Length: 103
Length: 468
Image (cartoon, rainbow over all chains, first blue to last red; front, side, top):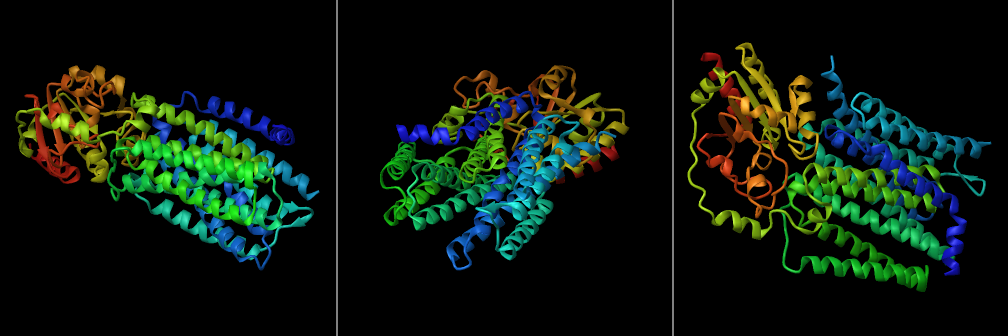
């Protein structure tokens, strides 16, 4: 119990961010037209690719002889990048088509 | 100096994610929103590479990092550019799976690191495990969802599946608690750790496998928010605010989006996850009933009926998408308009494989935006419509959703095409649609069937109309 309390206390700033972000996410998304569901999902998909930062940190702090960390980290960087880059490009391709018909 | 710049960069990154999501939810600003978020992401990635420090030691292994970024970037761009518009949903699912895998891999390295350093910090173990489990479930689930949408994996359910699912989940939670509270990070716990990983992957497969293909968009959206939470765990792990805001935003926005999608289909999330759509029981219920006979219509007859109509409404469905017939469809529409026929499209919110999917496809074929009617507007127009042409849509025009309380799609809002004078249905065969149920519409007296691949039929119809 005491242990959990101290963990919460240590990370209280982050917990504030979590709580506020939850409400922010809900507010930002509500009342989106159904036409945009697919692109929005795809865009959100690209944004959670931010996990790539973790992969870069893993990779960047690995000792040169720690092959497990190097190989797994390397894979993680590749997969994370595919998520980010592919996600944004696919979303842009979808939205490009919406734009064309406005003229 | 460097680390204070990095803090500002992370702040900017977080703001762009919020702005980006906000802009993405409005049609006018959506594209810009995507670019804003992408710019913020690039900044955050570059900032991390060059400015991140652990105890005043900058990151190294730049060669590995840039090679990884390059390989991933090339694969990402190529696959995103080459994918057909119709295969978009499975592509998104695949990208999502990779994000989940990335989170799980990070956890593996960090746990090993923790074991090697001998520090037994329960809080860290909990965060690492959470990211591992969520990431692995999301990864395995997304791959199954991808396989289902691509038609590579069939729906699969067996008796007692829910019990097995719950059992696996209970074991995962049990081991989780045991690792966090009991053993901490030691060499033995490494074995337990990999067991949890295997079970989480297994659970991801079990979780998605019985869910029907028609509900896949909901599942992908849900897994999307899972990956968001996994990314946010990384934020705790590295005390990294941008990972935290990005991840949690996607987690909460994704959950809301999932619920909105369920609403568009008039189904509850619980229903989607537990009641497997199109399972054995529903097929039996549909199959026992005598359906009567359907009638076919020849191409020429169909052409004449349409050419002399005042108003034609086209109802596109997934059949049109797989046949890549959106361009042929637009040609037909132009030809009919030249003859003075009013042509519109009725778009069901879940036409295609995902909400909004059909709008994207038709936009690709340059169909003007004003011609696309949303469901409510279309339903008020059907009574004054002469011909409705249903192109590869099935469940979204199934009157059973209104009339038959025993039907698994009962309550789903549908396009009431039977209000029109004549209904022409183009399908490849009489096989039931994605939900696996028969459609009474096809057996009604005013309905005629026009069998064949949507693209081929449309081209032939176009030629026939020119000759009328």
